[in-house]
Image (cartoon, rainbow, N blue to C red):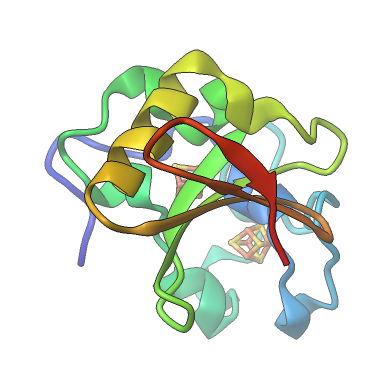
Length: 138
Ligand code: SF4
Ligand code: SF4
């Protein structure tokens, strides 16, 4: 997959903050020290491969509207290739950001498509079902 036409990260730096990046010894919820003020990467030409490869679902999916850009909702949307989960990943400092109405509506829709949908905040995980029911998930 690639960046959808018309999409760009703009000032969003959510993946440089929210995600664990082992290559940089970076924990969840800690802004990478290479992140430039206002967006962008100070070591863009030499950034690790994992940073080169990463694209969130918002930036790849043309159908996801501007309001769902991760910095606007506090929630990164991504498909996990290993678990095949559809994930809403949030900053542990705002652990319920995935309850944003637009995000939650999308998560329920994904569950209705038959995906295993989870919200993740640090070590906490919830499963979202097609009925809109939410349960803690391990
Ligand atoms: S979370 Fe998505 S939109 Fe935001 S910086 Fe990362 S790839 Fe770009
Ligand atoms: S190295 Fe650059 S692209 Fe990678 S997390 Fe840090 S700021 Fe983001």
